[in-house]
Amino acid sequence: MNMNVTIRRLMSVFTLLFLLISGIAAYVQVTNQAFIGGPVLAQGSYDPRRCPPFDAPLRGKIFDRNGVLLAESVKDDAATCGYRRKYYDPSLSPLIGYFSYRFGTAGVESSYNNALSGVNQNSPWGPPNPAGEVDDLQNKILHKPRSGQDIYLTIDEKLQQQANKLYDTHANGSVCQPAGSNPPGSMIITDPRNGEILAMVSRPFYDPNKIDDPDYFQQLQAAPDKPLLNHATQALYAPGSSFKTVTMIAALDAGTARLSQTYTQDEAVNYVVNGQPFRWDDYINGYPPNLQFPITMEQGYAYSDNIVYAREAVKLGADKWLSYVRRFGIQTPGVDVAAVPFDAPYAQSAAYLAKTNGKPTDFNVNLLAESGFGQGQLLISPLTMAEVTSAVAADGNLYAPHVVMQAKPSVGGPFTQDPQLYTNGQLFQPAVAQQVRHAMWSVSSYGTGSTVQHNGIHLADSPIKEGGKTGTAQLESGLPHTWWISLAPDDASGAGPAQMVITVMKEHSKEGACQVFVADDTYLAARTLGYLK
Image (cartoon, rainbow, N blue to C red; front, side, top):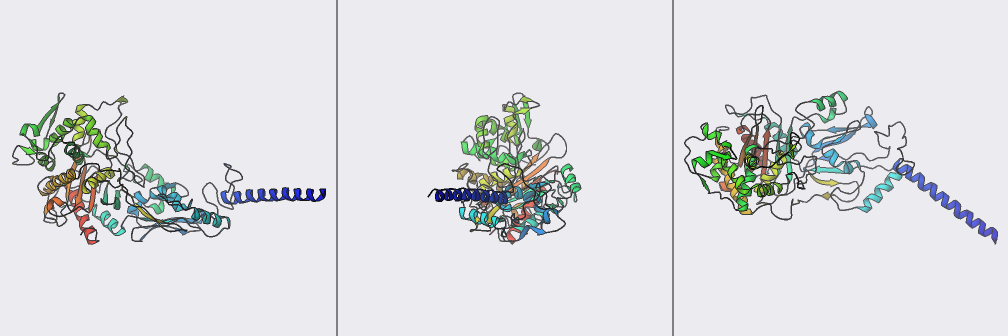
């Protein structure tokens, strides 16, 4: 009797030891570690600091919205770990980024690294898929073939190639940058009805297929025009007069101004704030010719009168003006402002600096006046200006911009990212959005956007019916940055509602008339592809 008990106890001990050893063996096999938090173990001839275990998933592919292949991992015995990443459109390199065993990840490759690398089989945006995780773990233990998720971007590769080519458009005889100069900058094409990014150009870009070359990577890091930076989402600039759009929205929505409000010649040309004089230099220098006073707020927008918008910002007051600025996810010192979410790397825009030369900055009335017409200490990304314009196009609603549309895991069904509003309610009233679109059409029909002919026609005569706002951001040194924010079609022209938003920004490139026609040509290309009805 005692012998049987002893045997049963020994069997129980041996069984527990067997299970314990089996569990440790399985843990080592799955995690490549001897204990939790321990060092990664050696794995064959691979360097475990750079290469995954031999049964790690093959990295997922990246496609455009129509299934055009943009990136994949291909077998290459000469490459680190036996595979290299291959990219098919270098113009997308600032957005898609790169994957490198030597230099890590960037861009979409970084934001969606877990999905692409198969770290888990859940979509980054949900819902959970526990069955997929169990199947993936089982495949890993049994060394069955595994793969990361394939992801589909909202980008249309055909439109991307057209936008990249048209970025270099030159209007002969205009004030555009000289042919061949092609300054750094960006273009963003967005569907304001859902936040989908249809194309995104960032200049300069780079060749992600050469990223593992240390000399090439070092050249990219040292380049003064920052090719590794996505100029559309990560670069911050003075927005110039394009930011008058935000001041107009705030004044109309708060009820402190009307589009038909009038200003005498003195009110429109001169303004003194705390002893600091402001002048409408363009008018003093002869633009627009033969202007009759008084002018309206709408005309002040069309002709880009700094004084009208300095006055309206001061009338609003700092607190109210800043509260509207923050509605677009723009940070201000001392306030926790949630950025408008974006599913690739980006920098949050800022309205003014917390400190200047190491000393606290007081957002006084002088800085408020300058900021009202787009100067001051504003640091704004092209992505933010695309968001402002999209909200105008969508009657005060702002859908969070995104570049990933769908992910297809190796197990389970596809995940689709639905449009998401930035806030639960509208940023401003629909009637205000309609008035701003009316003002944007004024820019195109008789204002600063109408001054140069392109292909023999004026902007207002283009079949696109594009409304927008020019911006010339004056700098302490060098040529100004130039902007064109636009939507099409503009319902104030009799067409509409708006179906697309294009923002073009070029660094140090003289006046911005050329950017107007870069956008118009891109709208025409988009219409050919079926995006504009």
